Length: 122
Image (tube, rainbow, N blue to C red):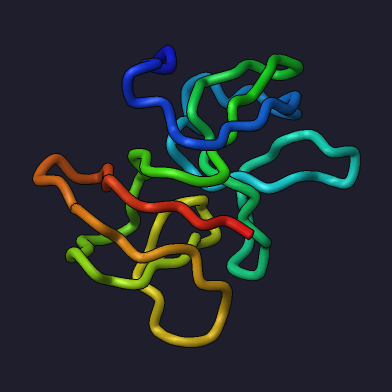
């Protein structure tokens, strides 16, 4: 799915994708690998770098949203105002204490599993 310039998140960076994320990565949390390429978050302790906005193949440019509002795939039903984290599958999940806080959810949509969330990946 291509980026829509009308709804483009506020701050997007471009990096090379290590793996083929064309069918599995869009709107999931990603991290930077040791060689500064993009890979999916794979552990609850990974530091989320941002939310993948496109669907790159291996070696292609990955657009990563660092700040702003964007859809994100969720691991569970979330309500407005919930504090969420990125789980070991790169999905937004309810933050129940401990671990890394991701961002407050601002407007869950009826069409789960995507959520319009304010991302503050640091």
